[in-house]
Length: 223
Image 1 (cartoon, rainbow, N blue to C red):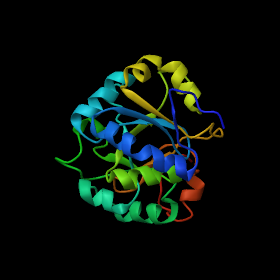
Image 2: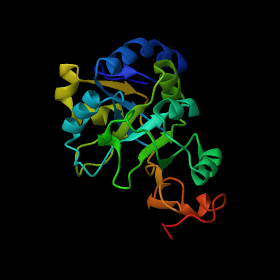
Image 3: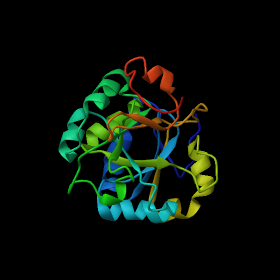
Image 4: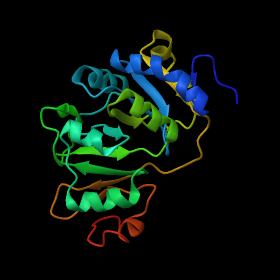
């Protein structure tokens, strides 16, 4: 598989391992990372106010649209003070790791308020992408996540798409691009708000609400 010279190979287990030290240093230095997930390519940063603001400016993200967090283990929820509600625990047991994002309570004073959504919670997904899981475990903390595209442009499905749209941040070193190959077309993750009296689908996605209701019949939304 051909990798563009400005991107870092992130396909085989050996490539993932070889990428870790410099990628972790880039995150700790406040840089933006572009990476493959189980759905789309994403942008992410360390979970601190300064790094998040870099990503906000890069994406020109409106205040009412926060980023989600990617984790690779329940211990990462504990470290940030995020709490799985009873309903969220049922969905997580069935569908994590995987393309379901849960909006959870908690995180006060540990998660930047810019990541808190209008419903008052923090959106979290336990990624099922093996390379990204390995990176997160080596890094030891969650990272932020948002789709790797400019406004009104389709989501990036390859490192080439990102390099075409974001040549400036790549050339300046602000953005590090991990090349996990071209992804198959996919819906984004399904987002479930677990903050209210009953959980509710607030963004349909890769896992239909009908499938989620097999384990949680009280789920609202998305028909």
